[in-house]
Image (cartoon, rainbow, N blue to C red; front, side, top):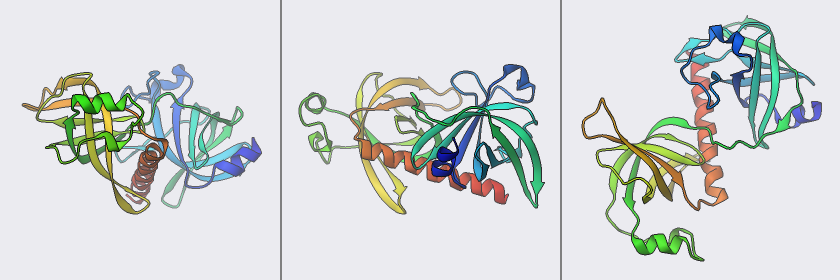
Length: 253
């Protein structure tokens, strides 16, 4: 465990916390819950103090400090350059260092490489253009050539706004609606490695719903189709970088 901590978990790593014991969730709400119904928080590693002790920032939610109690146990997920690592930990101390609030956690299980079935969704507001694929484009995607070269260029696109994005897909809002199960081209730009990069990705529309609080507005959930690993990793890197900026800004506030 010590080798893994020193090798992969370094200051600045993002860490997600999920409550283990439901009997201790009296201080946790129901919003922002994980897919398993457990409350989730985001934080950042300050330092690895020993082979089984790590120091992180006290999590915040909507600019409000969340005072997690001593002895509470959490499922931790460390987002590292070597991948996603998971362990269980117990809060053993909390204190204020100048203007920063700190949590000290002891690992109560081994750190292990974790393969998530679902990708983390990052809330955002990104401009996107899209269109439905033509029949010949869909047919080409199932053949030998499955890259962007099978897409017909210069066809009209419709504007929309991405409201969350992940390595597995995205959710967007538009004043029009695609049919569920339809295949669409999603065209948007992200800042990766300090530069703006354009993405032209094919996705399947999983669901569509009309928004109650907005007239003629429709929310779409889309899953990427045939996205190569390099592009997926770039999207995930973008999400991690934006999360780090958010955590940094919260600490400044």
